[in-house]
Image (tube, rainbow, N blue to C red; front, side, top):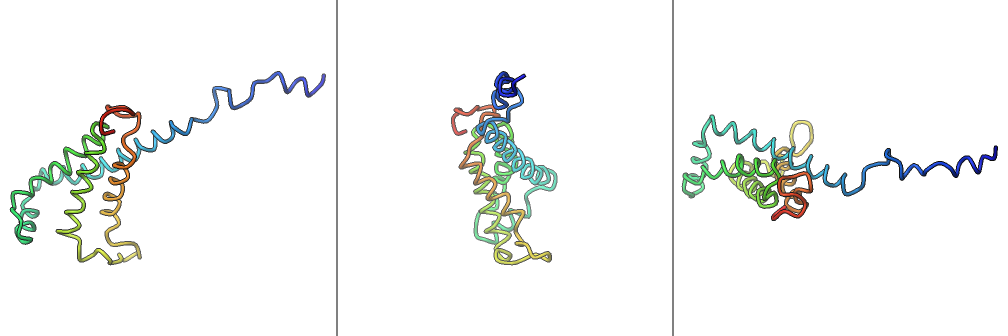
Length: 156
């Protein structure tokens, strides 16, 4: 039996059902993983604030010369927006709200540590930075097709 003839009768691996996922599918999976991760992590902070209240934030706002009632907007930035991100509905706008929320948190709470390093040598604000830049990345990338809004959904 001729080996050249035997090899040509087989279908190429790339066209088999075991082929690797398309780059678009991997992109959408990455977008899903990113928005779910940022959404859940920020949402946990919001759930804590539901039980503990936002009085300490109101105090910081008053100290900065702003109305203390603005503290209730943290519920939008840490509960409503992450839930929208998780669902993939108005994802870019929701992630933008998380970005604004984190910028306010940096300004009110974390300015003293902006250029500080932690005990292990990393940035003292690396967790807050992850939330900020992760949400900014979701603003730029959108939700992807694994979302309520779908790939072509408005604001996704």
